[in-house]
Figure 1 (cartoon, rainbow, N blue to C red):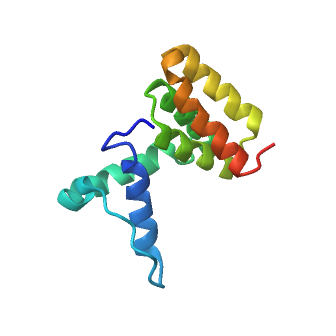
Figure 2: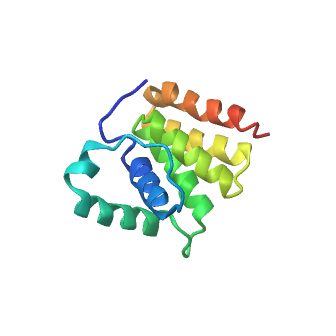
Length: 129
């Protein structure tokens, strides 16, 4: 597994926003040290992330599929898992995700192949046909 300290940063930021909006207490989510030490910056980062990946001239599903491709290029398994789940929630089918993975592999080279396995794991876990 490819571990980078920042790899799950967007996920942690979005989880923190979601948890703060809930009325009932939820189980504690481990805080990313960047969020803990620089909360003001990370709040801005989180807003930029939502603006970049939200609905716009380009549908959010296609933005998440782009995230899948880019995650293969940078070889980030946690990122691929996040973007595959988000794409599925937005209606992406297995073939769309596979094509996004292929673009990433052709762009970034075969070094992205191990990270691609994470996408297939998520699709199988979510029983995506």
